[in-house]
Length: 498
Image 1 (cartoon, rainbow, N blue to C red):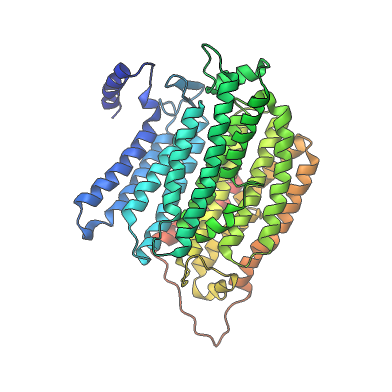
Image 2 (cartoon, helix red, strand yellow):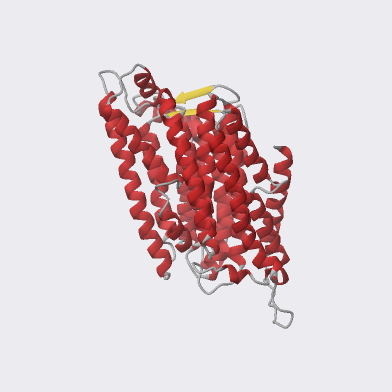
């Protein structure tokens, strides 16, 4: 494979004006090729063999994930940083954590989507094709060192997410959520693009690429900022706040998360939020790092308000998907608090990115455990999942109750789950940075979240159905039981390892 790629690389280099190391993005190329291969399968395979398509997608994702974990390669350097494609991309050893997060989200989403779409007689092939394209775009986003790369990869993923949110064409709620997400995403894209234009125009000079992260940082450090530059930076950060789902750009989240198909909701809550978190971290520690003394107080204030708004909103919700959506806003507040702590403490190394990876991994595991319970819970309409619908779940399916219990425990930060240690690491970072007011609000938000998280468990466990009421067991496939068991093990062992 490498020898074949190196042969092809010669032809690409002959056409490219600058040096391009195509082997450095081999995982992304493989995922994009896998998406194309799934479409070819749909064209040539008979209907009786269409079940091979999601299996092919999942097998390919696992193989790419294993490939990404192999260190000392062109796409995963053992140490140091590799800048390639004329400065458009920057590969480092910490990139593997974000690549692995996106691949894990794609794998778990595929597992959720297959039975969900089969039950609703929706097309499975198209869903997996779009899912793989989104994953490749997110993986490329993790290596961005240029605003062009960042915008193209982010918007490629966004277009795919628009499709997946409105994927159920026979569901009015899904179509409505797709339109709302399209409008909100279009506004965030406009913010990003306008901000990049202002930064490019205000910092541009002969021989200077004012879209390159390194050169933008050098220009800002040299004191070349103007009012237009600051306006552009504010617009860029606002556009990223949309993707992350932080205050005041969080209003679209409850409606979109509730109306979207449950597998897509899980993808939005994990991969999309991870992309927003990494993009924000990439910008404030990269091109905008010389302005950290101005950005840090802004992020601290947004973290506090986002934590309060998300948790207080979730308290008043009676729908499971809406409650989890608003809790995702509070998790965005924790991410903002972590980035603020990194800026204030002056740390800027591998530990910081690993801290974000740990938190996002814990959030991913908790979200998909909870989503497993929701997918197999029979309901008339996917967008209507009241808390009362969980009544008697313990008697109907102990395995789904276990998935819900461990998932909620990780999201709430109950020891010894991985979510507890992830939140604890952020609180320690805030204490080291002496951000006591952010620390206090974060601690208060954990206490508030216990109430609405365990209200979900109360309906499933403490308030079972009446003894006289007929209980119909919920059938859970062995593959889903295995995944639930594996995620539970990760929840427990991950907490002990960290």
